[in-house]
Amino acid sequence: MQLIFQDQVLVYQADKSGLDQMFNDINERMKETGTIFSHIIINGEVEVYEDPYETILDKINSIEKVEAIVLNEREFINQTILSLHNYLQRAVPSLELLVNGFYPSPNQETWEQFNQFVKGFEWIQSVVQLLRSRGYEQILEAAAFSEFVEELEEALQQQDYTSVSDLLKYEAIPEYQRLLDCVQMIIDQEVVRNDTH
Picture 1 (cartoon, rainbow, N blue to C red):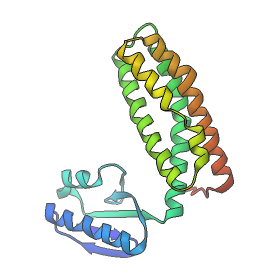
Picture 2 (picture 1 turned 90 degrees about the vertical axis):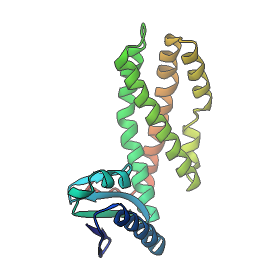
Picture 3 (picture 1 turned 90 degrees about the horizontal axis):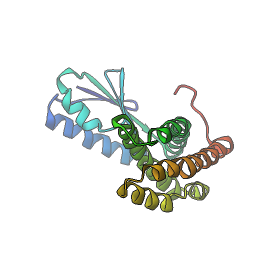
């Protein structure tokens, strides 16, 4: 199995020990080059952003080539901001649909959509923390969710689905929109777009 890391090509055995060595080498080279892991591309076709180790391990016998995509700090921040922007653009209309699913009471599809909302919300929180650590304080002002989370948890515990719907409609959607506007401002001022994505 080949690993392509920037301009280097390394060969590993297609087994768990070879995979362990590959990821050790990727981590070592990232330290040497001051880069940050973005994702991998398997066999020149499949992009994997989550759980790359497990994905490769599951399909190790059918993988010939793994390309590790790494970014410098600025590229990583740009990509993160653009990902947040793209996610928020899709999330606002999805939240509007989710709001309607809680009237009069949620069905299985509504709960599945709600679980997606929770996963997305957690991702947004992690991105906000990351951007805060990189000096983007204006994102924090736009992402004031702590009171919302407490109220949402209480409404869910009480099975007050009207309140859940109202919280999504009158607090989550406006906060997401405010965050989207803030991210758009950052993009307009400083993010270099890569039109190949």
